[in-house]
Length: 99
Image (cartoon, rainbow, N blue to C red):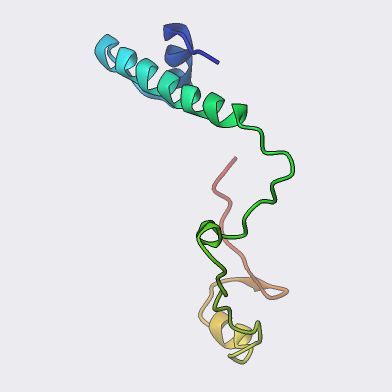
């Protein structure tokens, strides 16, 4: 996949960026370089290779230090919502900001 200057201009417009011609050309080179790397990675045959759970697993066996998922604090929802200006069914009510 190779981008053109028109593609860069469209992407910049969608991102609400103003790119002068020098920056636009530099962005074109950088993005096409990125896509070239992606194409090289896609060309590698990975059939029969299991994905790694962690990148360090390629070096050796690792044991992730995960703690048990258990509740460690009491439910204080009502105490936390006492100072809220408006609450309904346990949810904070806020003014509408999008019309």
